[in-house]
Length: 79
Image 1: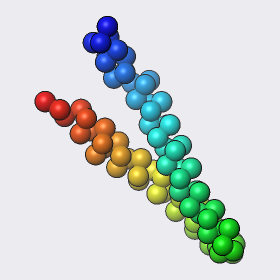
Image 2: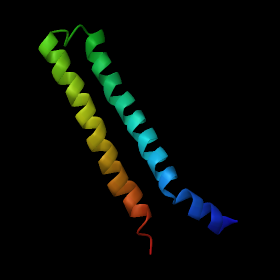
Image 3: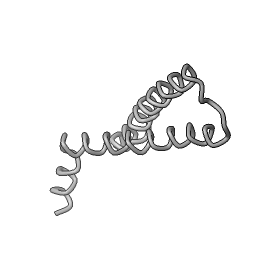
């Protein structure tokens, strides 16, 4: 049972679902930080809002990729 579970968790659909979920969580974190600045009355200029929006997306993608590579990649190199 354990080996079939490991095989199922190592399948491509599960990896895609995990990556999408991780990206959603990281995006939510980054956008929450953006909202903290808005709560302080900062960043309401149109150009600043556009830049911060793009920064949130770039940060989320980069942190997701780094997490996938360093944390999950390291888990796969246990032997």
